[in-house]
Image 1 (tube, rainbow, N blue to C red):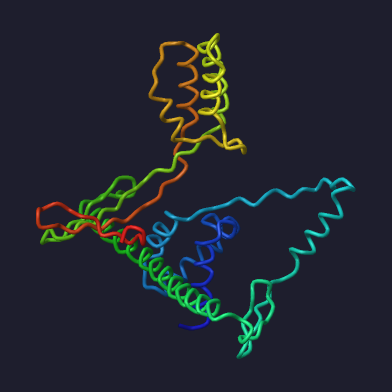
Image 2 (cartoon, helix red, strand yellow):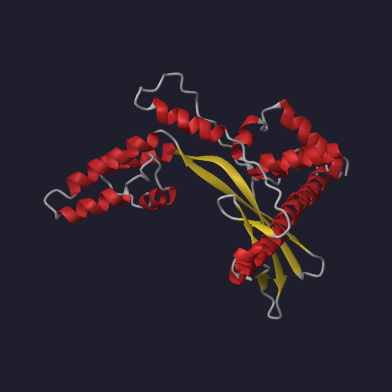
Amino acid sequence: MTKAEIAVEGIIKRIANDPRLAYLVGPMTQAYRDLTDAYAEIKGLDPDMFRQSFETGLQVQRLPARKDTPAPKSERPQQKKEQKRMATPTVEIEVPAGFRQNAKGHLVPEHMISEVDKLVDDQVNEIATRWKELQEQIAKFKVGTFGDLHAILASINEQYQVKKGGEKGNVQLITFSGRYKLLVAVNEVIGLGPEIQACIEKMKECAAVWTEGAKAEAKVIVDEFLASDGKGNYSVSKLLQIRRFKFPDPDWQLALKAMDDALRVIGSKQYLRLYEKSQDGTYVAIPLDIAAL
């Protein structure tokens, strides 16, 4: 690969792994389009299909707004200290032979390090190197596989004159022999809109009326079930459990309506699952998860 190709691939990987960079150089920018066009050309992929598969797992983190209001005097020394600390770049130190670098960045002669520490250091560094190489291979495999699958689906859609399709639902691809089954699963990511605050307050009002005269423990349980994580975020799974209770109380029905208005799809993620047919005819998943092997 040329230096230009290495640079393009490196930036694409950074965008995939850094949500803040994905916000700055994301799908809405011309720089992103130029980079993905270049990467697709390097890899021999269709640019639109590559972007479509690449963006399925892309995470974007909006950068915090600038704070133009000056901090109180009592906070300014601490702020300056923090800015000075953050401005100090991290420099890779070339470790000479016969030394090892400790957690504080100091060079320590090897004869001063215990044999156990040296053994652990060697083994973990070796595992980490292989681990990161494997992670990179899996990432390339994922991008390439999704590109191949989208190409197959695009070919099928073209044959039947379908302008667009295959992204929203799950797709199963089975080999001619029936030995392998590849499942492309699409899971929607559910978010909560501002209506959720009204929903929570209305549910708490209902609970307060229903538990009036009951033990204080009952109110604690209700409040805990409807509690946020301290940052104003509520558990979607807990809310979906509550949603099953269709109490006839008009206030409760109003709370459920607010919940329905608050629940919305904010994105989707695609997953690949490969199955192999066993001797009894059932399909068994072939995991790539280390814990499942």
